[in-house]
Length: 167
Image (cartoon, rainbow, N blue to C red; front, side, top):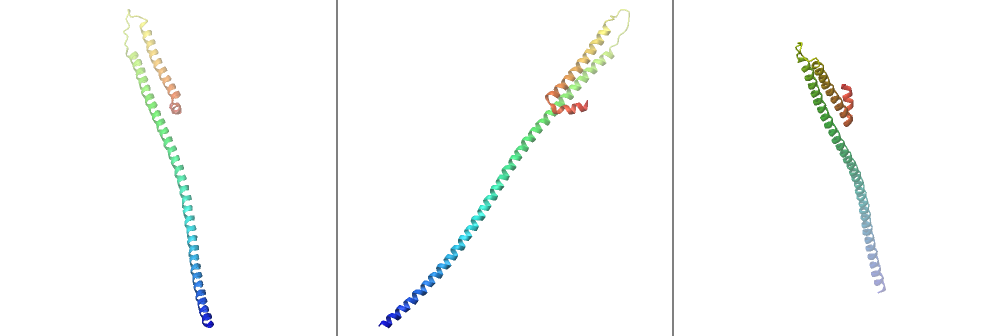
């Protein structure tokens, strides 16, 4: 009986060793799969981190570009406003010069067209008085024009170089 027990114990021990080897090989396979999965997870996390860093960089560049665009829009609005003001001042100067030329022309033409018939009884002070009022009219018109140009230069300095070039 002892032989049968020894044989049974040997068979059971062999069977136990075989099962333990099989379990160990399965655990090794699971462990290898687990390590591969963990390695894959690290790679995915690294890729996600790289993506997030690139996204932050992109967003920072986009914000910076938005600041540049805003600054450009503000500058363009400022330039357009200045251009409009320059055009308005130029139109005012044109109108003022046309008015001054018209008044001066009327004053000179009226003086030239004034026909004196020289007789013995005309007032001798009338002709010099008329010439004096005509010259005062022309002079005051020229003075107003000069003051308007000076005011335009003072109120809008960027138009001054253009006016100095024109004369």
